[in-house]
Amino acid sequence: MIVIGVENMHKYCFVFALGYLTVCQITRVYIFDYGQYSADFSGPMMIITQKITSLAYEIHDGMFRKDEELTSSQRGLAVRRMPSLLEYLSYTCNFMGILAGPLCSYRDYIIFIEGRAQHRAQPSPSGKEEMPCERAEPSPNIAVIQKLLICGLSLLFHLTISKTLSVEYNIDERFQATASWPTKVVYLYVSLLAARPKYYFAWTLADAINNAAGFGFRGYDENGTARWDLISNLRIQQIEMSTSFKMFLDNWNIQTALWLKRVCYERASLSPTIQTFILSAIWHGVYPGYYLTFLTGVVMTLAARAMRNNFRHYFIEPPQLKLLYDVLTWIMTQIAISYTVVPFVLLSIKPSFMFYSSWYYCLHIAGILILLLLPVKKTQRGKTTHENVQLSPSRKFDERENSLGQNSFSTTNNVCNQNQEIASRHSSLKQ
Image (cartoon, rainbow, N blue to C red; front, side):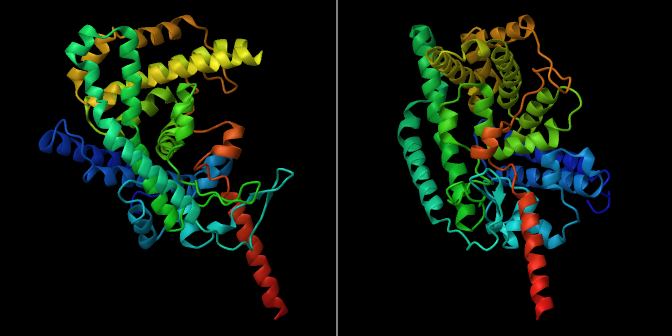
């Protein structure tokens, strides 16, 4: 970062960090324990890779690019000076997120370290943001207890039910030969549902650890209640009730989705959706199942977007028809998600193809036919709707009520700090 300079540091850091991570992943998988999932040293390295690349892009945006060239989110995250060695190591290797993350932006971390996090904005009844600069530091105790309870339930579910609902049973020869199609569909959904609590446990515990240390405060809601979801990595209710592929992606591994958006999707000039999914596969590791999952995810995401844009407006009214639409899209979304992520769990190429062949590649074929047959609508930016897939929360409602990690309070913090500096100058002048 120091030698290359701000003009090109983001490219070199990205290639070096991701390349080094890939070499370590190859070593772990093909030398130590192929076919056995382990998070040993590669887990922390995946988080550090995100931090190194994120910071490099943020410094490049803040110290080289002009403000008018940046998006609003890039402008809010831009770092205007090179961090010191201590600040750099503190951000990349701090104990709170070294094992399982979650990723946070450098600016949010520095705001927390400098003790300015409690000065985040509070929406007023008129909808505008007020500056509660004199508020006492909020307590994370309630948020931590709630998240630890979720951790306990997730762990209990994983240790009891998950063990009896193996994903591998989907490719069992006897099961494939004797089970009816409805049984196969139901078991596919249930087995993948049972595989999720271990992720709920790990990510919620990581979030609770950061909250317990005082990190993760995201301001106050309209009722004045402190919100501790700045770096939360998932929303379980929205995941399980997803009625679209995008809704599922928006609420699953949120901070990684934001990282993919910031370092790849927003900056890709050609096929950003495909590039983003490929980067996600490379970052996860070198198992073939990862690549099958994310390549399938490209087809499913684009097909789901095409279906939504072409048909959803016919089902808005009356409410009964909208309810029917939501039920049908929930069923299709859960089946499509389960179908897509089976190789991610199976890891190896042979069992993954065994599963897809047992389903006759039906969703792959359906997705490709949808992309070929349905018209593609143009967006305001001139890109196709298929390519304009957002991998992070983007709607105004989500930004106001549910969005995590969007750093909507960065500008407010700056204004709040400026107000404090002005007040301190006035007091010193009076003295």
